[in-house]
Length: 453
Image (tube, rainbow, N blue to C red; front, side, top):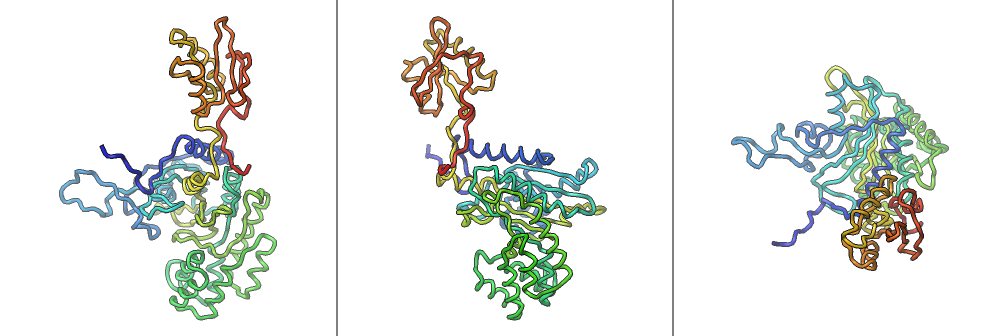
C-alpha cells in the first residue's frame, strides 16, 4: 500500500500542537461567555444560491454532491449544497429562520470549521477554524456595539499565546463621505466610489503606485486620486484622529457621521493593554466584502505582518432580511488556524508537554495491575490526569516510557502499602498519598509556552 501524503490546505495537528489549539479555543470561549455571548453552531452546508448572494467568492466555494447523482442533475446549479466559506452568511440565515425564538439584541459566538477553495500558502488554508462574535438586533442596532466588538476580541487576543497585535479600525461611512466630498459618485458597489474602495483595499498588496494606477483606470482625476491616497495613509489614535482627517480639507455630512462613530470605538478601547493589543485608526482598511456598511476591523500580529489580517469584521446593516424585518449586526472573526499554525511551524509557540498526563502509575507486576488502577482512579477523582503503565517492565523502562511521553511524574506503590512519587526531571522521590497528593500547580495541566518568555 502506498504511503499516504498530506492534502494541501487541510492541516492536521500532532497532539502537542492540538493542545495549543485547544488552549486558544478554551480562552476564546471563556472570554466570549464572560461578555454574555451565547454559543451556536450552524450546519456545515448551505444552498449555493445563499452563499453566492453576498461578495465575489464563487471560485472559493466547495460544492457538495452525492457520488451517485440523479440523472439530469447538473453540478453548479443554485439548488446544490455547498460548504460554508465563512460563519457570517450562515449566521444571517440562522437569525432569519429563528428570529421568533431569539431575544434581541442577540449576542452570539460561534467556533467552527469553514472551507475555501483558494490556493494554500502560509496562513491560508482550505479547511480551517474560525471564531466569530456578533451582535444583531431587529430594525436598528446601537453604534456602541461596534466598540463592544473591538473590546471583547481585544481582551481575548490579549490573553492568547500570540505575539502582540495591532487592531486596525476604520469606518466605511467616513470613507464614503470623504469620497463624496471629493466629488465621486455611485455607492460602495458601483460607480467611482465602489471602484475607489476596492482599489484602496489593495494598498498592502500593490502599494501606492499600484493603487494610483487603479484609480486612474476608474476615471478619478489626479486631485481625487491624491485625496483618496492621502486619506488611506492616515494612522491615528483617539487624540489626533479628527485633526488628521480635517487637515485633508474635505467635508461631507456622511464623513462627519463616520468620524464620530470611529472616534467612539477608539475611545471605548483605550484601556486595553497596549503592549498586547494596540488599537489604531487605519483609514486604508476597507474590507473587500460588499455587506460592510460602517465600522470595519483588521488585525495583524506584530512581526508576522506578512500573514495579513488574522482577525477581521465589521458592521453590516442589511445582511439579514426576512422580507418583513431587517436585522443589522456587527461582528468580528478570528482565523484561529491562520494565526496559530504558522507560529507552531516556526516554533514561536508550543505546549509545555505533549500529553495531558501528569503522572504514570508504575506496575510492579501484572498481579498488582488492579492496585495501580485504584491509585490512578484516586488521583483522577481529584483532577490529576493519570495513566497506568502499559507494561510491568523494569521500573527503569517504565520511567523512560513516561519521559518519552513528556510526563513529569511516576508513581510507585510499595509492598508495605505506602506510596512514593518521583519527579523524573529532578530525580527527587518523596512519600505521597493518592488521596491527597497534588503536583505543583504549573504541572497540573499542560501550558502554552512562548520561547522568549
